[in-house]
Length: 329
Image (cartoon, rainbow, N blue to C red; front, side, top):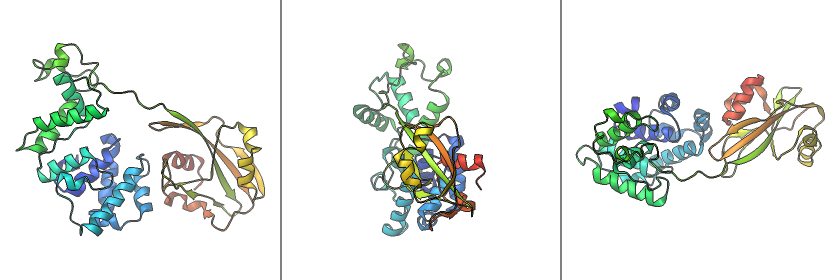
């Protein structure tokens, strides 16, 4: 992994942000694309948000990409391009929390600040038999304090990376190698047969179902309409086809007030449902049941775009997959 071969805080930071909520195998190509497109924090700061989000497309949790860009501009414009070199200063960067600040501070600047990620939670909870929920306020505080007590003050980078690797390779979530573990004589979870029940995690928030209808306009001169998402919801700053949200069946939707209002300005030649059954796109707390509607019209408004330019816009992966499948471009 290339970020293990450097102490450059920019590249460590970039890797940590990309790997939040993302597996290494998925994140590695994005890390390589970002370091090629933006070799320095100044290059990233000087890019447009659209460029950053386009490169981020497909990684999900797009607020990470927006925060990355905001923090880069802060470093360049407010800190004269000098990367923060302490845990406390790193916490001031947009999108940087305890884990990321600890990782950068220890790996790049040898500051003894303990990193606590999912692997570390698992190792510590099993080794010490701690059943405090790891995603509770008390648990976050308790595990951070314990990790901070244990960290090797002289080799904080090696300690942090070693305990994370130990959790990933040895003390795995399922079927850990307990018989060949160096801690099998002292591991509380092993002695008390609690390997499968530790760590403890509070139940997730209930999943919300949403029903999305995207209107894919196509004019005779090969144009379409896309709109930039605003607000603080999912996919902020990305582009999408005009959207109507609600639970409708096919006939009811075409006769619904939102559909008639959205299409009132156009002479419709044909309107058809592209996918008979909804495409279910699963996010952490939401399941998006999505139908695309193909609407052929004579002419579109002045701000319509050429269909051939769609690929240049950052869009959610749900829409990107649709564009590729239907062959709009």
